[in-house]
Image (cartoon, rainbow, N blue to C red; front, side, top):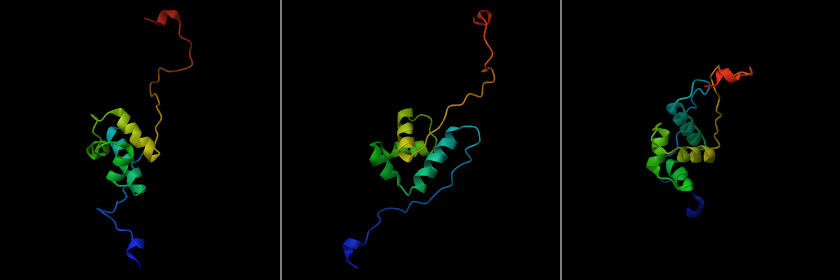
Length: 106
């Protein structure tokens, strides 16, 4: 076997993490765990993703730790790259198909 046919791995092997329970109420930590689980399930390193998206590795680490100070566009870029999406659902029971009269507006 020649040296050119052997792929050398630099750094650590990506260890897969479990996807969190997504039916629970949303939290930044739940999103962070889902992003980590998806990345590791795809066997992508932090460096792979940060280089592909032109974001810093420390920013990606913050995203995967659930740091809420990270800019939303960076979180969305990572989610899109990994094939993740989410839906906005209102849990406000005041939303209904009932007509609203003019007296109800303030």
